[in-house]
Image 1 (spheres, helix red, strand yellow):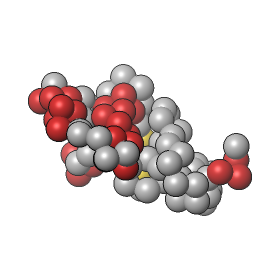
Image 2 (cartoon, one colour):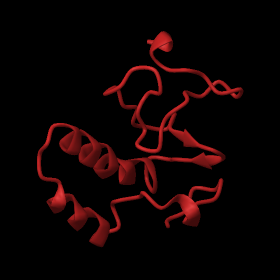
Image 3 (cartoon, rainbow, N blue to C red):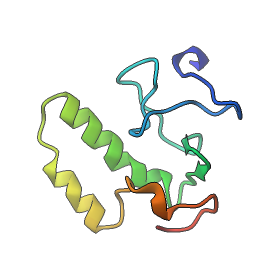
Amino acid sequence: MADLFDKREDGFPVLNENDESTIVPGLFLCGPAVRHQNHVFCFIYKYRQRFAVVAKTIATSLGLPAEELEMYRKWGMYLDDLSCCGEECATC
């Protein structure tokens, strides 16, 4: 699967803002290998907050309604604003 993602200089996969492969549209990465700039997404606080971002991207691409996913934002489970995140694993 390594050929499905471009690699950053540090070896982590290159992803777009929705955690999608930049070379294989529709292929998403979830988990601790997700990196955006210097942001590290640990399981407990961050990478699970990215699931709704991926779900909304998939729903939108299929022409399905995604408004209900905004509930995840209210619950603190929709992380699309990375300005509150540093390199440390802490809640946003």
